[in-house]
Length: 380
Image (cartoon, rainbow, N blue to C red; front, side, top):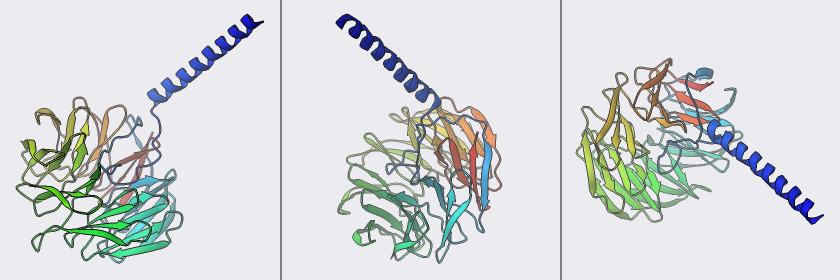
């Protein structure tokens, strides 16, 4: 009797184990689903890499035309897509259908990408305010005034929202009520400003402006830990991966800096200016430049691994999938799918209008916006 029970439980265990293995293997090969892309570049450290697979070709699943150019990138959370437009509205759409759920009017154009946390969407506007809105209905929860246009996208970490404003300051505010925790001033000239989006990693905020300087400041206090000066204005956003910070400047250089002290590890000179932000993946750093080249360089040495001309200009930062495909938009219009391993072009899709924004990938769909005011959802 005991022998029979032994074999019964043994074979039952083996069957369950096989079923679990099959389920696990199929989920890996199919690509699990990411349920949110809640800020620019997906994470506070700026790593726009999804665990999903999304192989081209793609087709337009839905689109929505706003009444102004859209430079902001879509973010996705809780089954909704959020994006701001130059028509001064922040929009919320149903992720699957594109149906407009609500829109909220600010007092000026929106070019900054919003972020979402715990049922609240935070959006900055050129009117100088940051707005906290209920994701379900767009109801205003609070707003906070900065003393300059908010052109840089927002990031949220735990209970703190970090805002880079054209008052040349980084504002750290409490997400529950908008109250100021600290403010860090970055001296600049009269036609300067902050376009770069701050990054967060391990208790440090990394922020840059047109004053040519990248700052590392304590996330809790705003106290400076180190600075690094480039040769020109910085529009690109810093990216943190492992023990390095990567930043590109309008001096046409891509820099790798030591995370702890900001000392340069290497730099690579490009043929044109760089507006897009780098993406670290599998030992390479991927970045587009204004001359239309997408370049992959060694993260450890700065040596060029491959270089591919895609079009006339790149401001879009790639979103990368589980199966090693990078999707990005072009300034003259269109969206490319590129193999990360060698830069080969796998697919090109059409858009109405040039693309300044960066894609988001959620639920095996890709979301993108154009300078003609159109928000797109692409899928299979």
